[in-house]
Amino acid sequence: MGSRIALIGCGLWGSKILRELVLLGAGVDVYDTNPGVHSLAQGLGAAGVFESWTDLSAYDGVVLATPSSTHRSLLERILSFSVPVFVEKPLTTTLEDALALRRFNTDKLFIMHIWTYHPGILMLRDIAQSGELGALLGMRSTRTNWTSPRTDTDSVWNLAPHDLTIAKVVIGEIPVPRAAVAERHNGTIRGLTAILGSSPYFVLEVSNRYDQKVREVRAHCENGVAIMENDTSGTIKILHGDANCSTQDLRVEYRRFSEATALHLELLEFVRYLNGGPAPRSTFNEGLEVVEALHRLVELSGEQA
Image 1 (tube, rainbow, N blue to C red):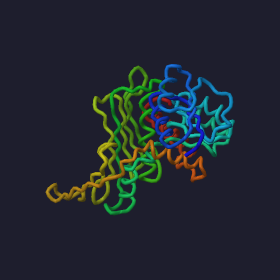
Image 2 (cartoon, one colour):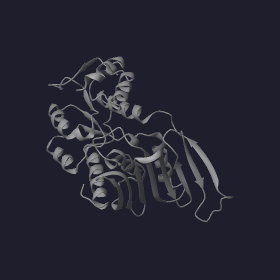
Image 3 (cartoon, rainbow, N blue to C red):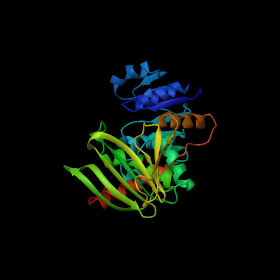
Image 4 (cartoon, one colour):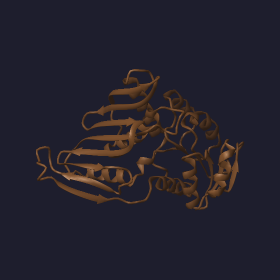
């Protein structure tokens, strides 16, 4: 689409972002301090590859895909150029760092809350909000796998931002955190189960201690349950039946959702914005809201964030 974009960070996720931006027709210069990724970036179609920058004002936009613990320090530099920025989640890894960014103009700062764009989550939202299954009583989100390539932060700050943004999409807000219990290993959280809100409620479980990857989201309603059993199934499973319905009378329906990837859709929205379209849907304030909720969940789990 002809935009000129600076991609800062081209690691495991940054390289996927680069591939999508190139497919969208953007001219992408990559900035990464690791010389080992430079040949990879060139092979993926980067227009230029550099180790550092002094001026970003010539770009139409910036995508920040570095480790999340570096976001505050890098954003403090990037925001001075008044260029639109799309930053990977979470906004920061501490509430203090997120609040510190408020002294800058954040009108052009947007967060890559990828599940905000996932077709399956959008279908769950539509089902829950349509009332076809009756009132939404609550939701459950489970996100597990074994360990993580991201070593600069713990499992809460790495995984739970996704679940909180799913709540924001389907329920319309992030419910108030009520309780949380964490599994800590040498002081580092590797798993957390939390309860937020009450009507509707939201229960989340994140863990890096499961040998199987699970990405399940459930919307429990008065007259049925809508389930995204995993993020790549391509279908929402709907169980039609109230709490008194027998299994024999339960009607099961499957609805297909778009196969477009959420990464493609969020980058498409950013590129369109750079070409005069509407602003991306996840603002700085929403990023701050997620950080505030994460901070409170860690507090509730027994230790300060």
